[in-house]
Each structure stands twice: as C-alpha cells, then as structure tokens.
Length: 162
Image (cartoon, rainbow, N blue to C red; front, side, top):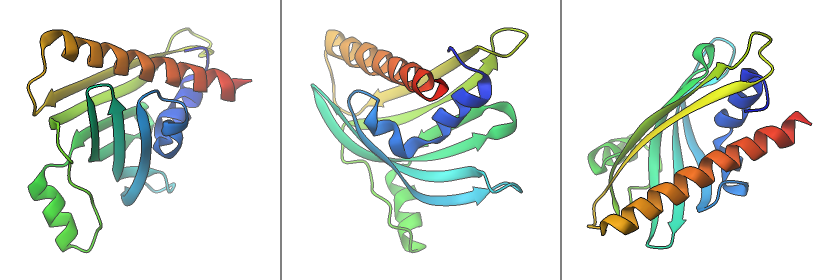
C-alpha cells in the first residue's frame, strides 16, 4: 500500500464508508459499539453488511474486534443463536439472510520499509457458503470479491493520502 500503516489502518477501521468504494459491497453499518479502549477507539463492534455478487445477495452481521496497537482487525459471522442473544439484550441485530454458513478472518498492516512510508496489508478471509456452488462459481465469487476488496482498499488509501 502506498501509505504508512497509520493511514491504511484508518481506512480499515472505517467500515461505514466501505460500501462507497468496495465493489459488490452494498453497505456496512456499525450497529453497536460494544467496547472502546482508553482513548475512545472502538475495539469491539457489531457491523451489519450486505453483499451483492452475481450468484448471491446476502445480509449479515459480523462481530468485529479491532487491535489498534497492532493494526489488526478480526471478524466472524454472528450465528442465529448469537443474534437471538443480542436481540434479547435489546440490540437490534440482523441474522444472516441465507447463503453464508460461516465467515471469519483477519487483516493486519505492517510497515513495508524502514521509513514507514509504505505498508503491507495482509487480508485473510474464510467464507463458507450454505448453498452448494459449482467450483467455477465459487472461484469466481472468491476471486472477484477478494480482488475488488483489495483494489478498493488500495484506491481509498491512495485517495486519502493525497
């Protein structure tokens, strides 16, 4: 990435605007901030999203953990029983509308060079669908979504670094 880790991290933490520049992502919306650190930065949140790819449209909620001191973010799909627990606590959370069995992953940023003017972003999503997809369709979705995400993040980093 053509920017320091701090800049890349600021893009990764701002889920609410990712729908503006990530292909196939209709939106992300922070539904509830569960925890913050001493400086007020979010460390745990429930984030709702909607993904629209050629073979699948799905709404879902992720439990997202942020580790600002390590420029690391981790996420996992809330399962139905977890959604029910949050709803019983009075938190309005959407269950997955179908198509996804499980989603989890992580991303983190490292400095690329000694002067920290560039960064490496490691992105490791794991997605398991609940509907059978032919191998070619699964590969197309994975390649298209992952590539679109990485290009979107890179382009956003370039845009805010100007």
